[in-house]
Length: 260
Ligand SMILES: [Zn+2]
Ligand SMILES: [Zn+2]
Image 1 (cartoon, protein in one colour):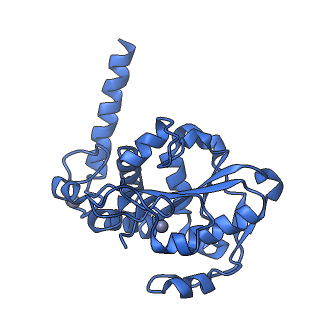
Image 2: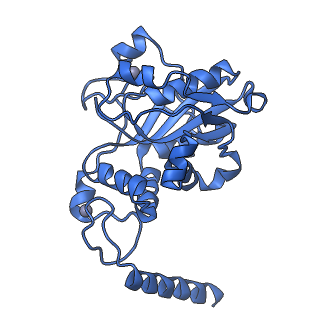
């Protein structure tokens, strides 16, 4: 009886919420009948692309379907990254790009919750949550700390929130104690990187990050979390300083990845 009442009150609350804040698709803003997560309309849902093998075991660069088994890409062979592996749930395009921008620039928390709900259904995330420990992905529970990519204090004040921290909390609700935003800081202001080449991004990020709690991470396995993997320069620079400070492994999980 108590559970029936609880379900009824949740449904009532959701109904009131939908009346006050009419639900809209996180990808294209089209009106939706109800706020059931993930909030993506059917046409947007059909355009969503998950990431999985075959891909580069290092940076996660996707290979076309039918390209055979996983194999390292040229850049990872020539200059192995400082992170052990980078994985993403979705390809950054269409409705996913729209939802990430809405969450980042319009503080759309429904878009963030929708994106996290989608990520939880991705093959890569399911394997990590199930404790898979093959070459593709380590178990999420194996990491000692989950570290969101920090924003510079000035940008944090402008935006009012760090989307990587909110995302880490939405992605790993059962591991909140492991989510640490006091391990790494962005102590140098950097220009926005959109439109920059890989070399320009590397130069822009030189000495931008510092480890604020080196004693805490010695011999620890860390999982960096961010919204988008573009060229990997940001996560690679974070991994470099974390490894230099004594972390035994730094892996990366991003919600989406630019197909290159
Ligand atoms: Zn839509
Ligand atoms: Zn690679």
